[in-house]
Image 1 (cartoon, rainbow, N blue to C red):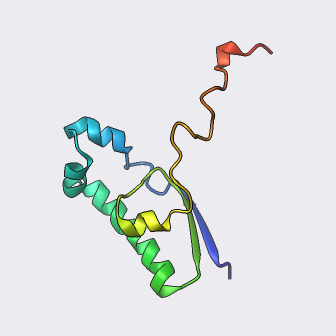
Image 2 (cartoon, rainbow, N blue to C red):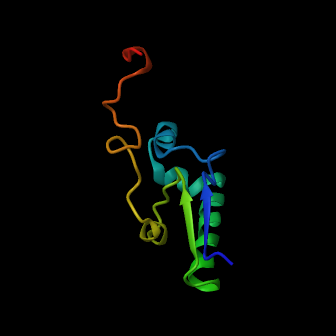
Length: 102
């Protein structure tokens, strides 16, 4: 049996960026405390975390994700800081489609 699981964009359909939440009411904290989607995301990641800590220690779950919870247990689980600009997967200096001659 494999000792790892890879999950891509687990919460993409209903988890917007922190910037979207800031635009709604000006604070992330107020939104975190009252938003059902964020509560669901937190419960989902907590389930994955507890599985690797308590149920099957040593099992590795690799998640590529936009969600970035502020909870300490979540932050300690990250293997690298979230990508933003810069650095990002696609460098800001890459030419746009219209700027490239083929």
